[in-house]
Length: 396
Image (cartoon, rainbow, N blue to C red; front, side, top):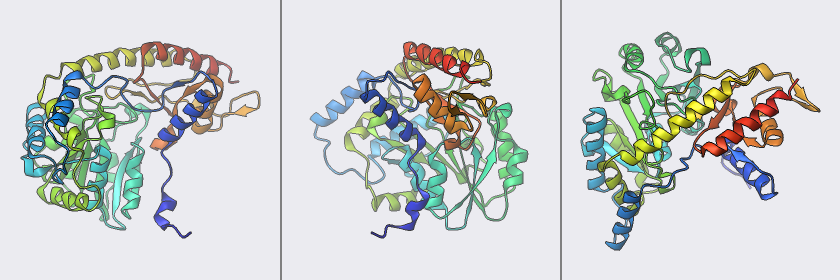
């Protein structure tokens, strides 16, 4: 069978690969602690579940408008003004089947074959694949642990040329947890102002999981706002991963283009998820704040534990629920017949010897690191850190 050539550029995300391997070992009776998937371990708050049940009972079971229910678009508009001081009317907003679809729609609406897209590394695994599926060319900018994995204006300027069409990044960042301050964003904006042909996708899905105070969006800068697409959704801040509801706010032309694309793929997002999301966005955020407090406690514990492991270098993530330690000092070391040559070797070693699932940093564009999710119980994290420390101590 002759399948489309574009499939040759697509591989299964390492996050999903490692989760699958974890499940396979668990099925064989091996005690595995899974730190691979970025999924809240909390239940969706009760008031959101109750809104969904109410919507079912009220008969919200028909096709939805492609862009989303008007009431939900209004709720997103209210949220953006309330939390971010961003003025986006409902006609500049569209909801989709998860933030991943919102990202894909935005990329497909902006990128033509041959266009260059700047992505600072480390980055979320799907960005590059989406660009390549659109025929674009990814231009990576390496940002290391000593820079807190954040892009500087100087590095951004050096990467831009006449083919640059789009810039994609996240804050708080998956996988590093790095959070851009207003001053750091202003530095990037000072560069973008000189290049009016560059669009910006700002992935803000981890907005609420922030340990340094209020979230700062690059869309707040009026001089570039007509080129910024803000991506967000319900999965992380509201523990609604399975509800598959993302949203996008941006220039009218891009929103219309995404509406056109979505009409030919999925059409409107799930009706019940939309009704529940209205309640989530407009209700008290206290359940979210409680989740974030738990993540902060786990974060403090994990980073402290990692820093006590000889050979591990870890920075403090100021958002999201990931640690991204540098483990490159172990490259070349071995345990028995196992030699650690790279980050993938280390991830497999920790799985097979330490029985802890991680994700290799190369999946996110950094070959020196591993990603660990602390979206699991403190008991699991304590056992996982003990297992990791023991496994690493065996490498000579």
